[in-house]
Length: 513
Image 1: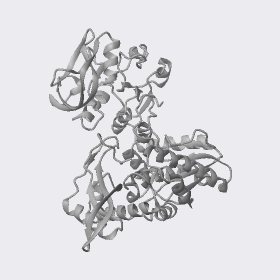
Image 2: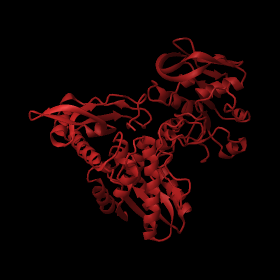
Image 3: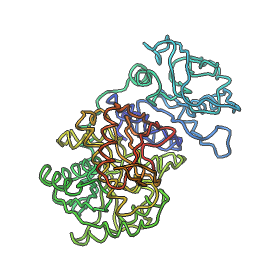
Image 4: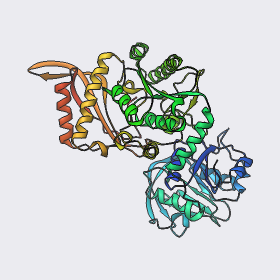
């Protein structure tokens, strides 16, 4: 770890990476480590502050994740969040109890804004809670600096403000003034330096990639999406002609996307890129498969097999690069704490075969989508390429609910293009984080030209998000929705009804599968 950064100890929370991201938003270097890191490693890293993440465990469970007591004596400010708070209180002699009911979602808290943690914060704010256990007694010589509206202890601090805990999650965007609270801890209390940015990240990754690859050759898988494009640009900037970009058309891309992607990367970036049509084999492997987890794993495995086959055309290839992001990792249950629950297996994480002939390089694995966009701009990529909506690696396979066929792919490709084109026409595309169409395995009765139809139901989805971990549905104007529905039904053979998805994340996911 870079010295004088913020060390985040991961106890298995789905939100751990959000903490790191919020810290980096303040231009402060941060890095995540396992909860059971040794005190020697901490001393060597010389952090300016330590943050203990939340987690799914209870401090009372057998096998509950514990922290080395020596770490809590280390002479830097330590902040515990949720489980981190409970662990601090429990370790220092306070009481934590499991209650019959917990707090989930928004909860109002009342704060002591004389404490530096809450400097310039209103006395009453809404916060995001997610816990069953509660602090019932604080350690000796500590003080309560916030309570929730139902009198649950919301924040605590020791006398000299070197050890603090928050029951709520300041890293989640639903917490009012969450960024400001973390900033107070980082700047006012921990005195962190604000000297980390995208330029630094690019420089560090270039050095790292060069050290990994040395004189060997590498292929980078590109899909046309933002992540793989930025990864390809970063790899190309690092090792130039030692890298070859490979686009495998699995038959599940957006309409005309393979051709568009190849042209943009080759002419716009000077990247050496080759396209291979493997759609027949992918679609044959997916024939009859309905389960989304099985789809993702089949696609992940076949991608590797296709890369292994294709790589032989380019000589002795030792490395495969991917545009994997951290949301892919944590939703696949591969968080650093090792205790995260699997939400869905991403094809490039949970879908990879155990034995590969490649060594993986994933230069964006520690970043969220918005951070990737900043890196892309830093690399000189055009904004229209960098600002494209996210597109899943498994492609339209996760937007076709149920069985996948060539005909169903055609229907979705055409409908999706119409929807996205209309969002551009109505100047809404740049206001939306992600928008797409979903083909549902339900047929409905309709009437067209005085004749009965019995065709597919199509859903439209548009959400706003910052990091992909939470999302709210976008309020598309009625006139735009009507235009999209009419044009899709009148022009896409096989669709006679369109609905709009207004589910947020949570409880839903952004993608349907």
